[in-house]
Image (cartoon, rainbow over all chains, first blue to last red):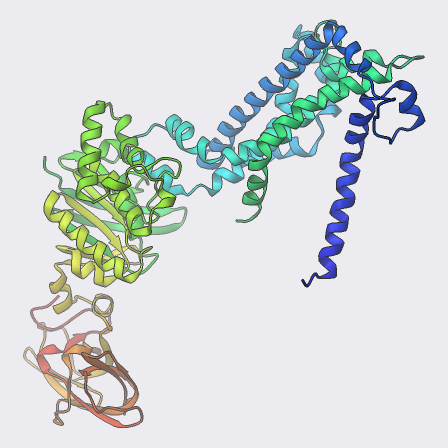
Length: 275
Length: 364
């Protein structure tokens, strides 16, 4: 077989990147099942008969609040996801399908949202949430995440909606289908790959976010999992077994969702790239 | 229910660009009207205006006895078949056809009856469970037509429905559409850029160019008596030969036209020409006859010969510099480089004045 050197170089780069990306995750996974002594003695070693332990998981599960953190994270992520996809798709449809005054302006305004990180506004957001009496609620987090996710969602979904042949909408209009029905029965099913893409892109940062839970909802009972993990990290003593075990558990749902969406994700990314 | 369609003073512009100007047209109930013209002439826009997918800038559209300018497509009793078929990719054939009816508050049994009846007419019954991507181009086209039929419209609108099909299938589907028109006796408006489709399907052809109607008439009427140069060149294949000529003499209604080294006295419309006027003489390739060396013949050298079997097309260059195509018998002796003579029957000549308008008496 004839392999060009260029291809080999590309694959070497990809493999190196994969190792770089997966390395920390693998490190967390293998060390989560090792004794504290083994973690520090041989961080890269696989757990064996002598070093294997599940003490970290036992401690995490013994902590009654852990389930609550998990539930909070799940609630915030799923509600944000549904709102972002639904509002994003509707906005994208409106911006691409209907020409109205201010159309371009709104599009530009949303593009700025992609370029400027929402964290720059943390202080004003916190002030706003205080005024609205929303501090220490999951609602505050959901509102912020929806604002954070919408611009990119609208950009990606708009690009996809534009590629749906115009004849389809016209045919439906001739069929007497209402604009809402056209959106829900024709547009939404046809952009499902794009929705998977958007779902992954918005889900991962929301699930992993530590910043906004820390400043907006640090109170008891409202912590998300990333915040919950912090209780095992002390100023003087850190329970590494529990930290690694809880991180392992935190990774699991995102990983599962990613595997579900990834099949569409690849299709979505390439379909968007090639016109 | 009567389904006349009438357009009065319809105009459309996108910004400063005029797409259609002052379109006046009456389509009678049950007619098969074909809009034909080169791409960009506004024929598709006109169809979309009738469908209600575009607004007009001026003018009135009536379907039946009702002004429909302000009505959405669904309330105009029309059904449209798109060039791209526009089938919903995620629904099977049955659902594609039933989708529109579901929202028209038709009861389930009635929807089912109509879909199955349309499927029967179009031989789609075995395919009802398939998705569009599992169908061939011709089958998709039939589903698109089926979706129109189930709506039971007063007016069918077709937007270049055959242009995505291969040549053999196109002929077949053309015949099916003609049969459908006979069976349903509905008003049909059909857009195409293919003059063969226009000639074969239409009971009335509307030739369009640059956003205007050039001529309206029955297919043979347009073929025999094109009103101007554009229609003369557009209808007929290969296209009509045009040769530059000049008016030599005018005696009463008889003008003697000189062209390509010959002359012909022809009856023209009174006072339409005067001596010295430049004119364009038109003659269809199929109206010329090989041989016949007389005063009414054209002579030239042969550039190329295309043999089709039952006939041959001889491309010749006249001494005057004009290029002419002649339809010769299949077994012609003509060969490239040789000389060639073709007889031109006087009654087959068309003459157009400097503005391109036909001046032959009794035409145009």
